[in-house]
Structures are given as C-alpha cells and as structure tokens.
Amino acid sequence: MSGLPNCPKCKSEYTYEDGDNYVCPECAHEWPKNAAVTAEEKRVWRDANGNELQDGDSVTVIKDLKIKGSSSVVKVGTKVKNIRLIDGDHDIDCKIDGIGAMQLKSEFVKKA
Image 1 (cartoon, rainbow, N blue to C red):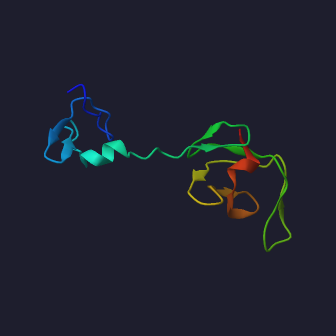
Image 2: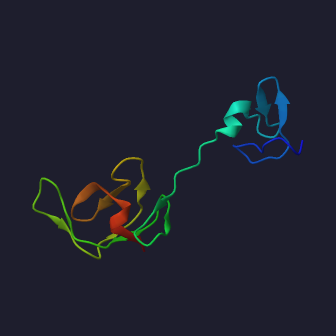
Image 3: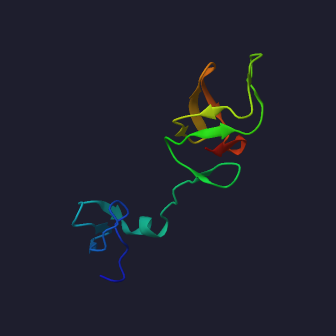
C-alpha cells in the first residue's frame, strides 16, 4: 500500500485499488486513478504583506478606496470583520459598517 496515494478527503493512508478507481475504506471516498496525478491545489489568498487569509478573518484597509458609482470612500485604517473569500477579480466579500456589502481586492488589505 506504500505506493498508493492518500485519500484526498480524509488523508487516510489505507487506500486500495478497485478497477480504475482508488477507494478509501475509512470514509468510503472513491476517485479515479488519473485524478490522483492531476489533483488541483487549493487556492491560497494572501494580503498585501503576504499573510494567508481565511474565511472569518478581520482585515484593515491600507489605501483609500473609491466606491464605484458613489461619492463615498473607504478610508485607510477601516477595519473589516468576518470576511468571506471568493474567486474572481475582487476576492473578498464583506460588509463594511456605514457603507454596506461590497467586495474588496486582497492586495488592498492587511490581516488585522
């Protein structure tokens, strides 16, 4: 069993082959053999300083950000709590007090 990959779901080392699939006896997860070679890495979001961001983190804005279609501005030092990370150009979904729901780019924030 030493040459077989660990389970991608539960990381168990007790996997076995079943036809064209690998099977994990601990969590019953099955995946094709060719998927083990081309397993995609999970995306990592980083702030302006290179710190890894996760859902639920608090961040601080490091630059005045104009809000498109409005005369409002998100000022430097504004603390944003409980962020959600999303895929796309603007990769942080959040709610800012006094402004409301919006999306930010991770390059304009630092982890608080």
